[in-house]
Length: 326
Ligand code: BTX
Image (cartoon, rainbow, N blue to C red; front, side, top):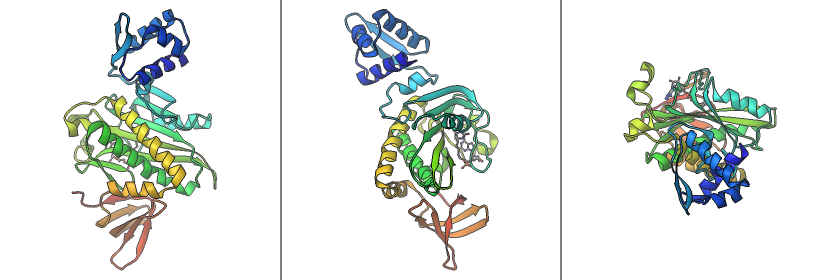
């Protein structure tokens, strides 16, 4: 509810300090009895709230389970993630975000699920999204850019995801073009960008992000054992998903505003600083066959350039890339 939202925002602004019942009542515009009821509501959701006479209330712990309240507590963005739709279980958050986009949901709307029963990757592939183990979310944006530039947003999102993981988990992932986030040569996160557009105009871009958080090795299906990893495996401990989501939203918002103001160039530089494989030999599996050669880098549009042994320079728009990651 709107009041609950304001209450969460008030606690966010207080940054862990006590808020008196009176000041909460003024901030959210209701009676002190109503404040007490809303505090009880948060407790029922799993928040631990300390109440001290003459000082007021303070949140000391958040629930293990994700909720839209928990995602908002500590979210310091202007629009990314300010509207959250949280679900226990969905087929794919991409589909829900798509529907919300048609219903004119505002830019920055975020759809998150605890579990996806048909999470998708690119090219009809599946994305394994078990209950409670990861961050399965879709972000809706409406940039005023030509549709052919939308792939740049995949690269921008990859930078945001790497930085969020760095900040929240202390790991240093690398990016494998175009959309794999890797730690120790294994995939920890994936990005799927889809859009609704006419020939020259974008209605919306739905950016799907999957981040493996709490899985241990036995939680991955056999076929992913050698190729996938999670933050828990790599750091040795569990992490609150809300913290990573908030960090991602903050990083994304910063980069997105920079992109809208200055174009792709500054994003390209950041992307290159996190990417691996530029300058080395690669095999790219595309719709039209396999291309091998040395990766020269990405173009202004975010397209990969590979130079094959006969000197031809190929522009790769979409592919799976193989190269030795060290
Ligand atoms: P992709 O096509 O690059 O990668 C898909 C491939 O990754 C699969 O074929 C499989 O080999 C491997 N894979 C599947 N699940 C996992 C996993 N959990 N961890 C590591 N590797 C895995 C990548 O596509 C884009 C993924 C986007 C997922 C998000 S989640 C929220 C949103 N909703 C939705 O349905 N998809 C996106």
